[in-house]
Image (cartoon, rainbow, N blue to C red; front, side):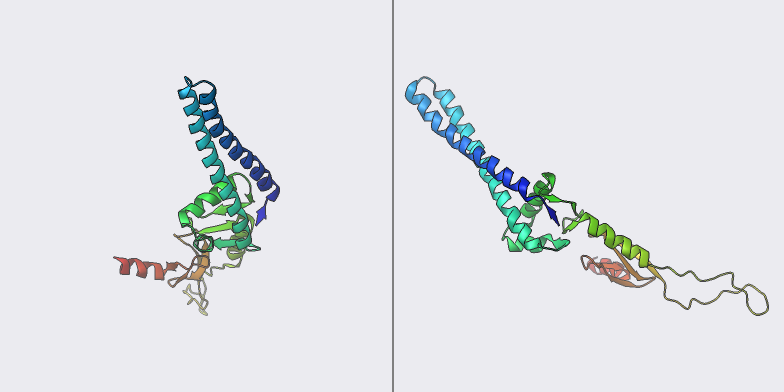
Length: 205
């Protein structure tokens, strides 16, 4: 996946200054009271603002540190399971999803997307190439209903070839080629599709 580490390094420097600013505001509050004890409300505002800025800055620094952990885990992969990434960083999956959305919005990870179910984080270019490759190799053979028999009459020729079609996974949106009337599992998330999906729905009921 494409990353912009220079942007991350710049963000780290800026965020450190944000933390320093918060600490400065916290220190200034008591100094105001020392100089003029009637400015209690002003001093209180400085301290509260400083705490908020410092906490926000530290939270951003943690996310920026997570970027390098995520990057190391992803490596040369074009697609990862977010649950596996959460286990790697020993964090809640939803927090990892929020971090990835935050990083993507700031361009730290580029040309990437997350599926609607928040199960996979993948390269847009690679995913499009994979979908196009599957679509290009998917061939649906229609029986020739207008074939003529030896007497010149219209007959229906039996289908000698196995028919395939592209099934869209409800879980991740991936497209998998399966036999007509059959079932299988998604190539991307291994969820049941086709006939197997219908069977699973009946079992769940």
